[in-house]
Image (cartoon, rainbow, N blue to C red; front, side, top):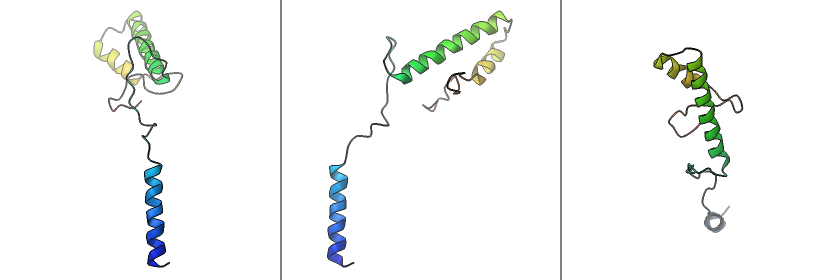
Length: 94
């Protein structure tokens, strides 16, 4: 391959990158509003919060009164539907 062909191909590749540039749709931050959203991720968060409340109420009914013990149980709980932890890790991911 000679230098002219190499430079021509490099310029075409650069034009292809510029022409195909678009915002990354896979990495959008979504703010879930209290009023409810149609976004599936927001609905999943609501489901997890409801399951946490139900589990906490069940623990109270069964006589688990130590707050630290309840916190540990809630922190270890996973969603029976998706298998993810019910309490987020704080890293922004489930």
